[in-house]
Image (cartoon, rainbow over all chains, first blue to last red; front, side, top):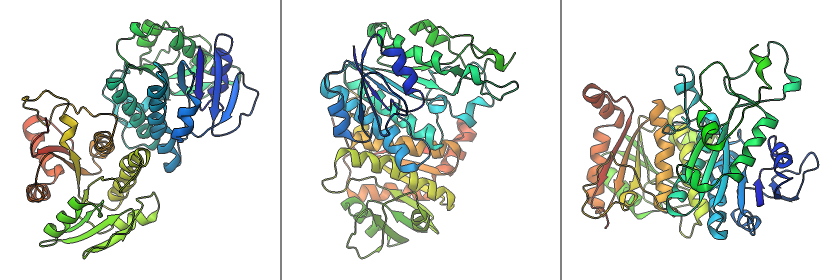
Length: 241
Length: 204
């Protein structure tokens, strides 16, 4: 499969690229040059550049969006919201039916609204990101994707993450969120997302929480395991053992 | 009452300014210069101090979310999302009491003709302006209301005259969303300062 990765030179990008490279042809783009050698071809591209994103998607079978710039107000909206619009326009233009988008867990479950009080938080709740810049800009990107999937035969899988860890670097007593995954384990979900029969997805716009099995019960990864066949590794358990 | 009206170059904003100026102090703003008899402030609605100054001392904002002439879709989307966020963040910081968002009843055009579509129904935006951009402005505004930092009244405008819209704005100003929410909270348990009213006829 020919796969366009937007934001592929960021933190998760290299892990996803190494995971996907053996089975797919990768076209990786990012606003910054990569810090390490990446498989496939690489092009400098701002996800906020509509024409550039549409051009980069030519000949692709799938788009994976890993782009994120979370702190600056201009770039956060450019990348996380307009970037999704550009990605969906590119998918429409080239007839690409498979799109994978990413974001933080509080794209749907605003941190101050639910995480403090609740347990068994699932991804299929009405999005309530609050006004946190990162959460809201990603939530608006998700909403744009949802609107496009109502009008076009495009399936978007949204993979939401929270806290990434390098198992080899975990220190005893280290603090962590109740929603953790190792970088390598996170990357594995993209293979599942590219392999799954789109007709096996419940709808054309599906949200998944991607993290390891954890004892706290704050969030639920059950849907990700049940639908995508995701297999959490047991490589971050030292955090709570 | 001191009222700030955005999209000052648009006919609807100009008409509202003329109406409201009879009883209120009115300030228009736009992302490009506009010739007007009313007080005018040029603002790109950025995230700098100028947007705070724009909203300082304002009691209510009428946010019209209209594109500039010839503006491309990407820029329209930017204005409807980022600029709305900047405006409302500044408004919340400056203690503005009320925001009236002028949206569109075209958001409900996807329902079959003859349906008695109500404000509680889900919007059905297309992937193009104005429904996509108005929808996104609603979505951004809703989060400020959800957090309680602003009372937001959404007026979804259908086929309605300037006079009809002016009456609706007068009524919204008379009963801010936060007050309406307190009324609802006693009757229905709702707690959010978020109110939607459909104005005029839905296009079929």
